Amino acid sequence: MSKPSMFSKHYKKEIKKRRRKIVLLIIVPIIGLTIFLITDFNALINTGISMKKGITSVLLNKPKDKESSAVKVEKTPPVVKPQSNTEKSKALQAESDLKAAAALKNEIFVVTLSDGQKISIEFTVKAAEKNIKGVTDDKNISYDISPSKKSIVIQSKNNQDLLYVDVNKISKDITKKAHESSKGEMFPKDGLLKNHTNYLWSITPKFIDEDNIAYVSELPWINDKGVQYIWKVNLKSNVHMQVKPASGKSITFKNNTPKGLEAFIDGNVVYVTSTGEAIE
Image (tube, rainbow, N blue to C red):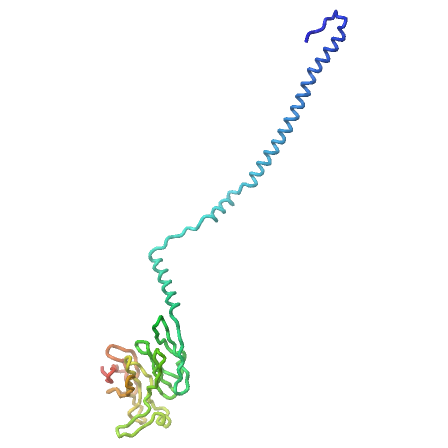
């Protein structure tokens, strides 16, 4: 911008005009700069706010280390330790025992003795096989189970009758009902026990084998000496016979052995055979 000549007749006007231009040249850039600075500052503030919100959002949504670890632990599947051969064997055995117990059933068969007693005989049933386990009440009886557990003999302590029962629930009275003396005289059991209340007719029956049962009796004598003898009955023929020689003041049956039924007579051991002999 050229400076006006002082010799010009319009000098003063030109000077004022020049000054206005200079002022405008100074003020306009300042105003523009001010507007620019104000606009950028607001944008900067807005940008800062946005950044702050973003950082805050990230911090809030970020899981804590401990919580994250806990989640990872919970989601981690448990480690299954492989079973050893011994553990597998025990597990298989336990499973087998459970199946066997489930397959094993108990049955009760009630029999009525001649004196009116009702005796409950317990059977175990596994598949098609039955075995006799015992009786539920042995207060007024004595009994014995055969070696095969397929039959049982029960003696009433009230009247000394003998009852045989097998796993098929078939029962029969095997009591010796009367005794015939060497002279042919008959002595009925019930009449003899009525007159001699302490007499031993047939007590403590015990299986010799599956077909023969031994018992203690004071037969063949009827006196007050109290001598005991061994008798046996064959289940097929229902024949009673005295086992000889075998007598004493006290006779107790024990176990079945290959030699025969073990019996203690006044402390001495003999073996009762199925043929009706007492051997040492």
